[in-house]
Amino acid sequence: MTDSVNRGLSKPAAPTRRRLGFPVGQAPADAPRRRRRFSVLTRRDKLLLGLMVGVPTAIHVFFIWIPTIASGILSFTSWNGIGLDRIKFIGLKNYTDLFSGVYPPFWPAIQHNLIWLAVFLFIATPIGIFLAVLLDKEIRGTRVYQSAIYLPVVLSLAIVGFIWQLIYSPDQGLINSLLGTAGTAKAVDWFGNRNVNLWAILVAASWRHIGYIMVLYLAGLKSVDPGLREAASIDGASERQTFFRVVFPVLAPINIVVLVITVIESLRAFDLVFITNRGLNGLELLSVLVTNNIIGEASRVGFGSALAMILLIVSVGPIIYYLTRSLRADAE
Amino acid sequence: MTAAAESTAQMAAGNPRRRRSRGRYVLHAFLIVTSIVWLFPVLWAAYTALRPYADTGGAARGYVSIGGSYGFQNFIDAWTRIDMPKFFLNTMIVVLPAVVLTLFLASMVAFAISRYSWRFNLLLLMLFTAGNLLPQQVVITPLYRMYLALPLPRLVSDNGLFYDQYVGIIVIHIAFQLGFCTFVLSNYMKTLPKELNEAAVVDGAGVFRTFWDVILPLCRPPLAALATLQFTWIYNDFFWALILMFTGDKRPITSALNGLKGQFFTDNNLLAAGSILVALPTLIVFFVLQKQFIRGLTLGSTKG
Image (cartoon, rainbow over the protein chains, first blue to last red):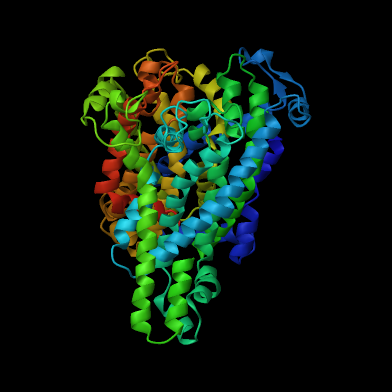
């Protein structure tokens, strides 16, 4: 598994370069030539540049990438976290345990993560894009509308959880008050009832996600050359046609960003669920299971790492996709 | 879709201007309704916070009602009940150094990789960008063990470890946020003319002076945008402190709100007031620095 992590890290280099249009071997040859122009750099300058890059890179690698690789290695072990000599390699056992259902919350978590992703991808993100398209028109007060829709983006997800509690609570919540069921036996505990709580929480999460996507997409729309739209309208294209046939394809770079953010955000989902009920009883998510295996009574490092690796493997795809696309655009 | 579709259909139907303005009304109506729906949860929290529990809970008027008394008592209670000043201070002890150091370190890397050519430029940029996209839970298990094992001088850590220390939380924020800031700043620095470096060299400026006196002052716009964004993100953090800070009294304000939840009974009016108070700094960012915040978000996705 570590192997696959490493491969994941080094893989993008080759394809990007190839797509950049010059063969792999040529790039390094190019670098020294350009560096020669700055041969005025003194030794001290070179040392300084090395430090300027080296120190932050060391911090980043040490605290982010070393643990990631360690997660990979530890996922093949059984360890209670105390004493390095207690680490026992057990091969794929953690993984087979997970997939064979020895750990009951695993499959529900996978399912909930997928539902989360589907709701973001097919409902929340399109709504965000749709609102951005509407707000991009020259209308009065567009600023005010924009502000209202993006307000939730600045709020901490922990606060979002508390704010929606006021709407969903069985005794004091708005919905049950409106239904006249507040405080009665008929009250629906929107965050507690395992038949509805995932959907209730997705409403709250989408509330924030839509605003985020709207802001990103609106910035993209503003960057579209107005001439394109004029040309389309002269050719008799309707607004809908103009968007789908002209604007949307031109915005390919933003579409990628939006897609990747949507996927990553749905894998990262944690705070809201943890605040609500610690990710139990209908709200299991991979991220919460990882956490519960560290701070729970029994610290199962190997097992938690295997869960983390699954989370990593799922996120590596979109990350590489994003890197190759965005850095290629960058170099052009 | 209705508003857009309608306005197009009418535009095609002749007499464009008048038809168009009718389409506009539909559009405005739709956007007004959407905005109200979006603001509603926050407004509802504010409304609830202004009312005492005695008026709304139990057998009294209920939450969906007007009348009774309004006031700031819930805010005062929330403020003192969980000792909010202490938790706000905890948050600031982490947020301020983390933002400043992240921007400082990220701008150095961005400067080196965007203004000079080296062999590892692209690789470095990938490393940082990918690191920023990782879900936090991927690193947390080994990180937690590292934090429990790594020594730190007693000068900055009263238990000699990274774990349960402000320094530890600051460091992980820096390590994690470096990715995004480096990406954004290097994109921006690439747009600055190459000749600036050459002119600086001709003037006899070394690398650090070129960075500090020539390039950095030109990067004020992205730095301001990133500072706003990072402030909000780090302020809003809940996860790192939850795992890496053991002492409840040292946790940031976002995790303090749980203290307002009772074990058997929760006063939602009090909780609403607490939520509003905790959200206040970010709401101020929202109202005052909106432009910076949006620019920060979009700088990462669009170029320059």
